[in-house]
Image 1 (cartoon, one colour):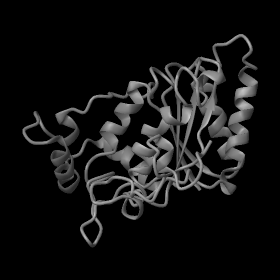
Image 2 (cartoon, rainbow, N blue to C red):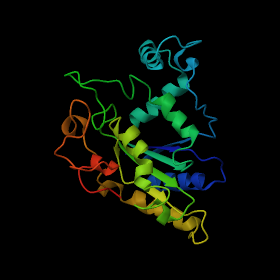
Image 3 (cartoon, rainbow, N blue to C red):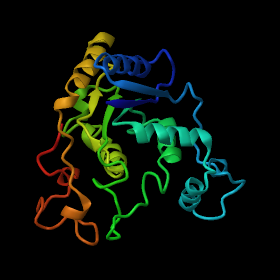
Image 4 (cartoon, one colour):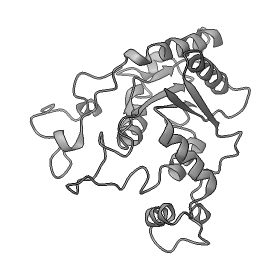
Length: 257
């Protein structure tokens, strides 16, 4: 298996960087080929700019420029290299600290610049249906989120003040990974790292090792497929999860943990 690790570690001294190195070492020890992108070490520019598509300025929708640039071979060389890494990967692992209830800007900007129209989305099947939510460009790949948060684990539970951790990660696991066809595996959220009772770095490393040790046996989060479970207005069909409006209605079974 070929794995691509994308790290949004703010520094080489951060917990995120340590866990990225732990994940890379564990996957390598399992015999997998591992590519690692340390976005801050790369001084990754999080902003989509005209130069990404060989332009001086935008004069049409950005997605159209991205589509043309891939066809014309004018897409930025760094972006193209990262797209190549995505294409070759069987597993994509995102390692980041949860900042303001989401991923750090550098990682969001990586997706903005690399997951372009014509590459990650904007594709159609033979019948003209949009390829997304299960049947996306990257169908067949799997994804895994490894994140850390400061507050205690109870604050991220079903009734927790911060919101359920799975709901907080939904825009990533469902809105980015599943949208583009990547089957997301159960996320690893290491909680409470800023609390007095946090077990410490070695416990966090062991959680990463244990999570990666079961990859071959894991089933993806059972998200519903757009063409199977939603109507023409992209509303969940009435026969599913009747009377409910929580995010877990988009699962084919009980909430994945």
